[in-house]
Amino acid sequence: MTSLILDGAWELGPGVAIRPERFGALVYSFHTRRLTFLKSKRLLEIVQTLADHPSGRAACAAAGVAESEFGTYERALGTLVDSDVIVPRSAER
Amino acid sequence: MTAAVPRLVDEFEQGLVAPICLTWELTYACNLACVHCLSSSGRRDPRELSTDECKAVIDELRRMRVFYVNVGGGEPTVRADFWELLEYATGHDVGVKFSTNGHRITDAVAARLAVSDYVDVQVSLDGATAPVNDAVRGVGSYATAIRAVERLAAAGMPSFKISVVVTRENAGQLEAFKALADRYGAQLRITRLRPAGRGADVWHRLRPTAGQQRTVYDWLLAHGEDVLTGDSFFHLSAFGEPLPGLNLCGAGRVVCLIDPVGDVYACPFAIHESFRAGNVRDDGGFERVWTDSSLFARLREPQSAGACSSCGLYDACRGGCMAAKFFTGLPLNGPDPECVLGHGEAALAAREDIAPPRPAPDHSILRVSHACDESPAAGLH
Image (cartoon, rainbow over all chains, first blue to last red; front, side, top):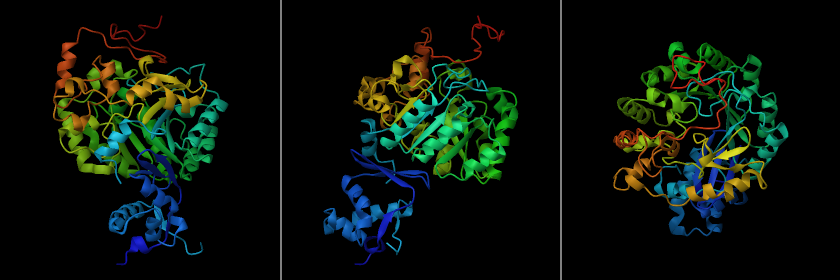
């Protein structure tokens, strides 16, 4: 099944800073001035490596996400897209 | 992805690698003498951190990935090096949200502030009308604040804040505050009156009534994330549905205060020796205080609900505000003095003959004592 989120290529949004924490990470956007929480270390790993993978799906797979869990991560990444924490990767990269 | 998940609250109560919300009062000097000042500001403290010491703290905050600091005072802009420190912080990826009474916000300053993604401004205003505001913040302070707001709006400053401490006198003006903020393209922020600093002197007469607390809660729920609160009204979550934001006391766990002389306190409302964790001038600087202080370690341990443990709403309000309890002489593991079930009122009545701890240090230029209310010069000797 195709998915805009899982098949898209993503990178961190402009002005986004990440601080790893015991439970995952804090993410702050200087642009939107909003604080977001990544509630697992795996989600943190995926977010940090999105720019190195051709798609969200590839980043999830590389972080060890099982096929059956893709839906969970698709929703999590969707929330991050909505809050501009991650943005579509610019073509020239 | 939002904060309203209980498990995350449990994580936060055990402390974080660095604070989420760090308040830094840059100076105790102030051109105003607000009756409810949390830091009892007025006179500059001669031991104030130097420009270089402040820059060293900013370097540390950057290393610790503290995304932004809430700068206040006193009036932070009266420091001669304020703009230099602002540039230094924002140039080192440490965002600055600063609170001001607007005194030094000229057209030129407003224009400079408007172009930085890393700067946010909060103009303090405690009445939607001059008489209500000026009774708390001093004669002329309403006009000064509104002039600053006009200048920020004219400069195109995006989403600056108008910050209001809710009192018995202004609780009926919430709609007027919202309209005022909307008129200038600002965001409204309302926070809770604490009995800290000079606020201890006026808390009993200025704190919202029980009925007003309910009105504030309903109004906040209706406005959702449209109105900011600094998550300061979490004790009201016991009315029912939780308010947006972090509903817990973050003192020493996700929040702390650096005062003008470098002392680190558990929170901005707890300037008292009992809540002093260390000083940024100590070996290891701020980071060591944050990670190693015995006070903060105690605050990060599981806390006893004490007298509240039998209350079914404890999970909603989590016992309320530590500082409000402390400065009203209530046990820290019991109800908040403004507990919405009235348990705080009962606790206050039960201990009314015992004097609560006095907020200190005091940098007031003039402090009117209760004993001699008719003589404003009392206590000047």
